[in-house]
Every structure is written in structure tokens, then in C-alpha cells.
Length: 180
Length: 246
Image 1 (tube, rainbow over the protein chains, first blue to last red):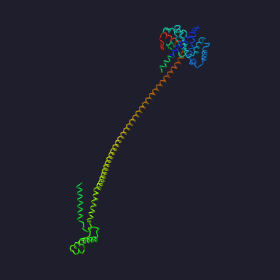
Image 2 (image 1 turned 180 degrees about the vertical axis):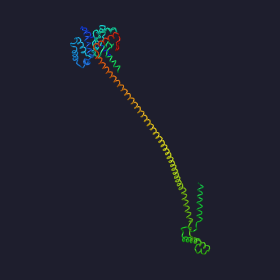
Image 3 (image 1 turned 45 degrees about the horizontal axis):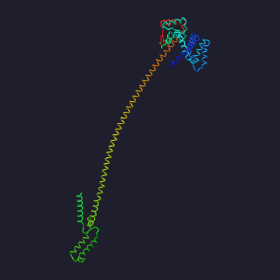
Image 4 (image 1 turned 120 degrees about the vertical axis):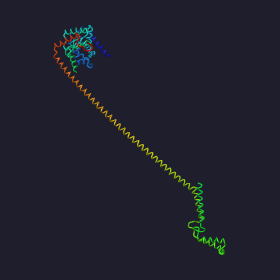
């Protein structure tokens, strides 16, 4: 029941953010900036806990958001992040951003493929990966590329709950499991 | 009883007759010669009127002389006078009658009572002896029973002690065996844990070293090659899947 309530709440915030970005006419840019902010948020536990900590004054948390995005992202992106944090949902910010991107892709009859790699993918690699996923699964996807050094090498692709793991990290983990 | 009484009275009558027959005529014990002479004189004067008349009659004179000589005779040292025998016999008979009527029964009752008391005492003594023997027998039986019970208690206590000792020994052996097993299990668990820890440490070191080696050897060309190879595998549908889907 609590999960359903949280999912509905996250979906509501995502719809609002998407509607605002569409209304501002900067949907694609906002999606890209929000995806990068979500990536930075996931890589920093301190930032996540700070934005989610209700004991910290809201003004201070909004000032942190302004310091991170002010002048570096579109005003709409900063405003939307501040909207969520100001509403006291900083702990669900990453999930709201993911839901926003998924909802936007669904609006284009596509799904989001979150691709993690140790180095940034080239445009040609993105196109080829998009085609490869369509060829293997029949899905039209939009690539959300995330640079994650912990992958070490190779690529990990997540489409919803499906994971295609071709990373060196997973190979090393398998080797470690074999040795243990 | 009646015959016995008659024989007793006959004996008494015979004895009295013998005494009366043997009694002396004038020598009663306690009568003086002078008194006797005076009595004979008075008797002769009453019979003949005077002593002169006695002297005149030769026969009377001889009788008078004989009577006087009788006064001179000494009294019998054994036989009493007749009157004494009569009074004495009468007193004896009276006393005997009293004794027969009241004395003898009282004595007999006393003797009977005494005999009865002695008999009862003897019976009581016998009873007491019997009781004492019975008590002694009971005591000996109780003593024997007590000895038997004591022996049984001692045997039981010894058996319980043996059982307790065996139980304690068995328990101690079981505890020792359990402790040994537990110690062996602990040792085995520790050994396995140590091996697992060592294996994990070795794996971590090996993987860490591998990561460092791989990370150092992954240049841009290798990264590109790995990504291209991954894309080709996805296109061919052969790439490794993880999670709920393919």
C-alpha cells in the first residue's frame, strides 16, 4: 500500500515536471540536464542525504540546489529541482527524474535504455546500440548514457527491469565468486 | 467335716477321763498339810460328834488315821487336782470353741487369702514373666526386623549411590563427549571460516589486482573495442543478461 502510494506520488511529480518542461518548450534539454543531475545525485550519498534531510532548513537545501545548477543548467531545470526539494521530496528526487524521463519517452512511444559505461559513448555507438536493441528485442529505445567508472570496461544496459550486463566489473565479480 | 468334729470331741473326752482317773484324793496342788488335817478333824467331828468318839471306835479311828496320813502324802508333780482339771478343761473347751467358731475360720481365711495372694502373685509373676518373655521375643523380633530393615536400607543406599555414581559418570562422560564434539565442531567451523576468510581475502586480493591490471591496461582503444563488441553481442542476441529479463 505504501509502495503504491509512493509510486503514485512519484508519477504525479514526474507528470508535473514533464508538463512544465513541455510548457517551457525545453523538454529535451531539461530531460538531459535532469538525467545528469540524477547521475550526480546517485554518485553522492552525502548530496542525497542532505537534500532528503528534513531537519535541514528548506532554504539551505534550495541554496545547495541553486549552487549546483545555477548558471550551469536551464532556469527551468533548476526551478523544477527546487520545486521537488522545496516540497520535501528530495529523498525521491532521483526516482522522480527517472519517472519523468520514462514518461517523456513513453510519450514518444519509446522506452529509456540506461546505458552505463566507463567512458562516454560516441554518437555512432549510441546509434548502433539503439539499432542493436531494436534488432534483438524489437523495442524502440532512447539511450540515456551514464558514465560510471565502477563499470571498469564494457557496457551495462537497463531497460526497465531488464539488464544486459557486458561489463568488465561483472566479469571480475564472477571471477571473485569463483575464487571464493 | 462332722466325722472329723466327732473324732476331735471323742479325743477330748478320753483325755479328760484319764486326767480325772489319775487325779490324787487330797494332795491337790496348793493345799497345806495343816489345812488338810483341820479339814479331816472337822470332818470326823461332824461325822462322830467328837474326837473322843473317834478314839472309841477302832474302825473310825483307823479311817481317821488313814485320812490324816492322806494329808501327809505329797501332791503329784504331774497330775493336777480334779477341780483344776475341770476348770482348765472347761476353759480349754470354751477357748477351743471360740477358736473353732471364730479363730480358726479367721486364720483359715487369712491363710487362704495369703495362699490366694501368693498364688495370684505367682500367677502375676508368671504373667509378668510371660509378658517379659513375650516382650523380649517382640524386642528380639523388632531388633531382627530393624537389623533387616537397616541392612535393606544400607543395601538400597549403596545401590542408589552406585546408580548415582554411574549416572554421574555417564553424565560426565556424555558432557566430555559433547564438549569434545563441540570443540571439534568449533575447530572445524573455525578452520572452515579461516579457509573461507583466506579464500575471500585471496579472491579480493586477486580481483583487486586484476582490477588494477585491467584498469591500467584499458586505454581508449580497448574501451572502444569492448563497447563495440558488446553492441555486436546485443545485436546478435548473445550478450549476457542479468536481472529479471534477458
